[in-house]
Image (tube, rainbow, N blue to C red; front, side, top):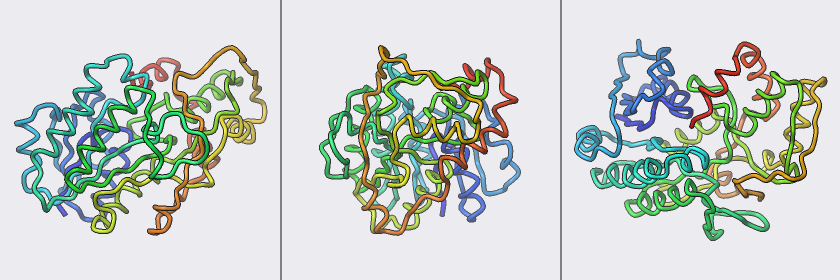
Length: 310
């Protein structure tokens, strides 16, 4: 297939693109390249890869790039509530207008896969399913809900990813497990607040696998939203820290009682819908942490700012 990946040099994209290339797809990466080209350097030798520097908010340019593709995997976005809050105009422009630009220039036969998020749910009591009312609390979540509406209006597939973790060529250290692991390595201590808050997690390689799964099952999944993760990875922040301690037993924990998280997510998510189609995760939290420990000792505190995603 001829596949367009917007944001293909990013955290998910730089993991996904090599998988698509090795499956024999012709891949066009469309990315602003604000973080550089290094995340794709390991695959630039492949003849079935094309890289275009561009912004999805440029309607005329994206129209040219969408033309003739069999599938569009739309990853380009301002991701996470801190990044969105730091530049709301860019977040709304990219996440909503950019998505509208892509969709408006698609043909009826093209497959559309959209990277959404569990942040669409907002504050929820109980277990989230795809039928749970979306009540996003953050600008990020609100922009993704609107993006979903745009995508589903043309039969696109929306993948609501759990909180991602793990190594990527375009690393992100602001993600919860990545950040906690980096802090444990550098400070040998973790300050934890709201440790009882429940989250749900997914390794970035499993996220990329889920996108390919959607590409292969596009007819069945068309026009729907799917929670992407696994019930086994529903856990509290404290449980994550204990897993880090298993790998780094000298790491200590202290609890902060008067600090709150601006991202108010505290819920469990059901993944029954995607499981019924046959998708399951492969990488456990502990395995992802062990991989990061091969790299994090060699990163500096400056790297933590560089890869904060803000």
